[in-house]
Length: 380
Ligand code: BMA
Image (tube, rainbow, N blue to C red; front, side):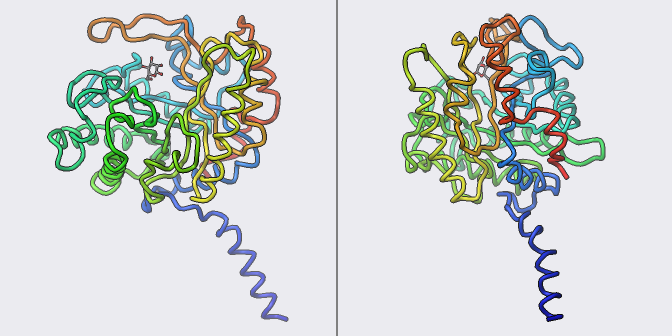
C-alpha cells in the first residue's frame, strides 16, 4: 500500500513534467524557447493566437508613433503575436525591404516580447545569383547556395548576419527572445527563387537542412523555432513533399489568402477547412504545432469576411496561431531606400465596412489577444 502511495506520488510528480515533453528541433534550444514551444501546445485548447505583421511600426497613414498598433486601434488591445521581416538584412541595409529600420525592429521585438507576445520572423532574401529581389526566379539560386554551389560561401555570410541579428534579441534579464523563424515560405508557389518551379524537392530539403544545421551547430543560434510553410497543397503527400524531416521543423503551417469576390462562392472557407484538416492531422502525427502563418483579404471589401469566411473555415480546428499581413505603410519605390505610402491593409480600419465583423471575431472568445496572452505566461 505504502509502496503504491509512493509510486503514485512519483507519478503525480512526473506526469506534468512528461506533459512538457515536446522536443524542439534544436536539442540545445534555450530554456525559454523550449518553454514557449511546450506552452503553445498547452494553449491549443484555449484559443488561437492572433498575429499581425509590422503591427507596432506603421499602419495606413502613420508610422513610428510610440505605443500605437493597428490591432489596438481596431479592438483596444495589442495582438498576441508580432511578425517582422528580415529581407535586405543580408545586404547590410539599414532598412528592411518594407522600409522598417532594423534598429527600430529590434526594439519593437523586445516590446512585443515584454507584452507577453510571440515573435515570428520571415525572410524574403534577395536572389543570391542575380542580385534582384526574392521574386526573381531566375538563376537556379537554390542549386547555387547549397553545399557545392557557386554561391554557397556567399549564402554562409548571409546566414552569419541572420545569426547575429537573432542572437542580439534579448529580454530584460539577458535571456534570448524566442523567435518563430519562417524562411522560404510559400515554396509550393511559383513566385520566389526558392519555389517548387525553381528547384527539386531534394534541393529544397538540402537548403533547409543546411540552413538549420549552419544556424544551429556552426553559429549556435538557440532561440529559434522553425516553421515549415508551403502555400497551396491538396493532399497530405503534397503537403509533405518538401518536408525536410521532423528533426528540422517545429511548426507546420501554410499561407492562404482570400482573392476575388467571396460573396457568391464558398471556395475560401471550404479550402481553408480542408487544408486545416490535413495540417492538424499531419502536425499531430509529427508532434508539431499547426498554424496559419499568413492570411487575409486585402482591404476586406466583403463586410462579413472575418466571421463568414475566416472563422467559418477555421471552424473547430485547433491551431496555434493565425497571422494577418501588414497594413499600409510604405512599399519600395524607385532608387535606394525610397518608399511610397500604401493604403492596402488586412486589419480593418474603424471606417471599413468589415470593421464590426472584425470586432465580432475579437469578442468571439476563439482568439487570444494581448490580455489573455499575458495570462497564459507563455514563457514560464
Ligand atoms: C508581401 C508584400 C510586399 C512585401 C513582402 C515582404 O506580401 O506585403 O509588399 O515586401 O510581403 O514583407
